[in-house]
Image (cartoon, rainbow, N blue to C red):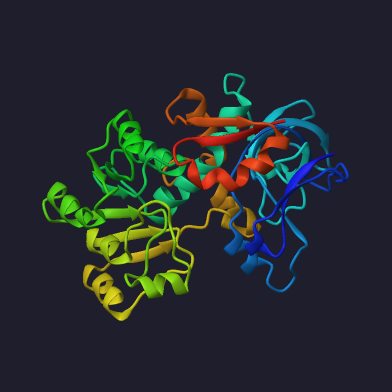
Length: 360
């Protein structure tokens, strides 16, 4: 069987297609899935480096968001049966990659795929839905009437956040970094309150947000990473290079209103005393968004499966229901084969709109 891995050391970003992987045998409460589709996403190398600091591996898996058919069951499995179509998320510490022919996963990390939902759409949407639920409803506790600022709303994750936030009655402001992103966001339904173009001028963010909110600021900011330095020398030292505009942390903090919540994907965020003072004066808080925390911490599976605050529903099941009914829509920009995926991975940073999916 075949599967895609990233070789260690992680900073080399070297991907391989391993063709000598043994077909998995399930342990208790595990299932073997014949993968049909997998969302292609570059591994979070910083997180992997930290997670495996004491026990580094020679290679790490590529691909976590999968859809496929169950072909084998371990002892005690009761939620699914052989032949069922399922969709789910492979834990980051798994040995078997989602970008491969077969994988072994806990029965609690998958749900049954509805017939009307294609394997491609299921795999493309499930990971971003779980991440969006985590940010909006577990960390930010978004309610009807809140104002949410979504940075980079045209990205696959940002697009899902916008749809879920507006469905729950929040007012959404978002940013675009190119003309293509602007056009894509203008077609989002229901429409967002404002699209702020930061392609040429990122310093207009705060003034635009304050004008839209009457000077009050937003209740929630969900970023896609932030810039921490302004001096070119500092940027070079920490290799803070981005192809697309990235907002400075001070601009993000300045957009927050009283008791605002900043949900950030910047794992190495550094807050200086003036930043902390601004957060303090607003009574604001910072949450770090790391979606893999649910599958890494099995003690939290109850919350993972019942993350919604007002309905006793599994987060995975509710996400799939919304994808099937078209309440949450995903855009697939590119479909590739397993062999083509290795060449496509380094190019992913250039694909901002839509998801790339691997079909087996």
